[in-house]
Image (tube, rainbow, N blue to C red; front, side, top):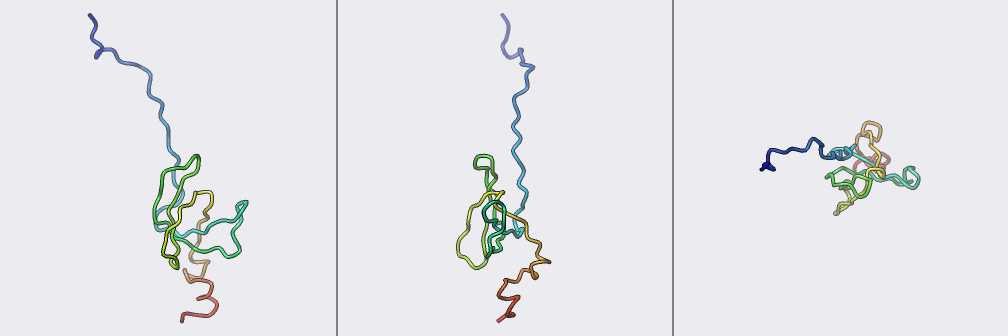
Length: 100
């Protein structure tokens, strides 16, 4: 009688590598418009969480400081914002008219 515990399969299980998130929590991003273009009044958001993929697209939770809610969006809808080029994080109104 042969013990089934001594028989081992030489085949390795298929390994599915999940895609890596491009953005990390705390980074500043902007929503893209249609066809990868930025919307005319693109608001700046901060990544608040990473989520599992939806289909082939990774998802993120994002939040704008002026809103009381978070949004969920896909990675292909986001673009990284360089804070140094966007007026040190100030909104367009603050950069145009000053603080207060």
